[in-house]
Image (cartoon, rainbow, N blue to C red; front, side, top):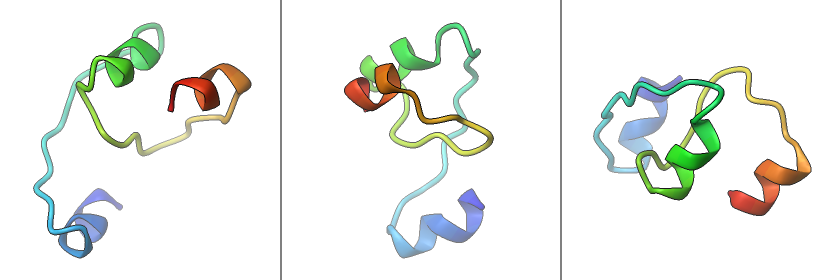
Length: 49
């Protein structure tokens, strides 16, 4: 999915290792711009992202 999306965004893929426990913090610290996979939408995640 990421490899298909990147060209349309004129972006390069940089894989970032994270864990479910640190995912929200990593996003807040701009360690990543997008998360792909089975990420459920929650109110807390919506407020961060």
